Length: 156
Image (cartoon, rainbow, N blue to C red):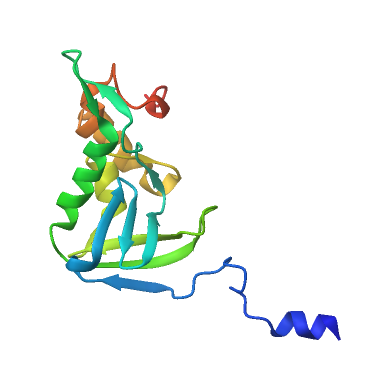
């Protein structure tokens, strides 16, 4: 009998599965948490396939001046959204229970645009070409090679 009960329980009972596969928010309901995380109303989504520096992570410009490179990534994400609605296709959950998804604003893939703009790195193979292109063109944070985010070192 316990086996039958287990089979009848919902798959997301313990937060392991997304409750909806497609999440949408109007511009007024979107909050930028950091360069890889959005709040769509009450739902939090981490962009899939990429990683951005955390807010407060310090990088150094070529002239030696320090700046918040995590804040720069968050600002780049805000510019990409540009006051438009966002739709995310949720593909899973992370260790913190946040949805992980591929999000778009005005038809543009936000994760791919951040990586291609040099404000995030690819964590899988699907965006690696965009990262290499951004790196070779010294786009975004790649323009500050000597003082770029710590986890970006060695990616040349």
